[in-house]
Image (tube, rainbow, N blue to C red):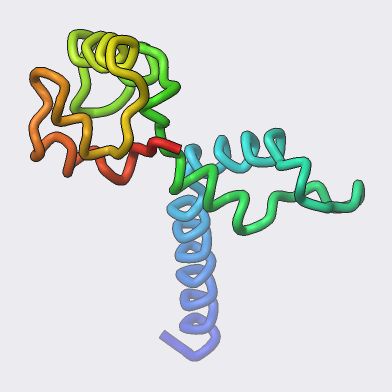
Length: 129
């Protein structure tokens, strides 16, 4: 194999690697979140009409800090959490109606069927604010 063939082969391999890297990094969930973040931009954020792309902090909120407020969540929103099924979701809402808002995420242990282990698993997904 001469140098020209090696260069041609290397260029082809590099092109294939670039296509694979692009496809691996272009995650459909990220594209959907970008679309949602663009539509849900905060009114407190100043942006020019020419630049409607979301800021990094908006993307972070949309992608990573999407927490469920246990004091306002519906049964359906609570059911969407990994460890919470329909029965526990109904118990959480009923407990909130009878006892008022939760003062902390840890207060979920007052709901029958929810222990500290479940709270610890869900902690990053929940808020009381």
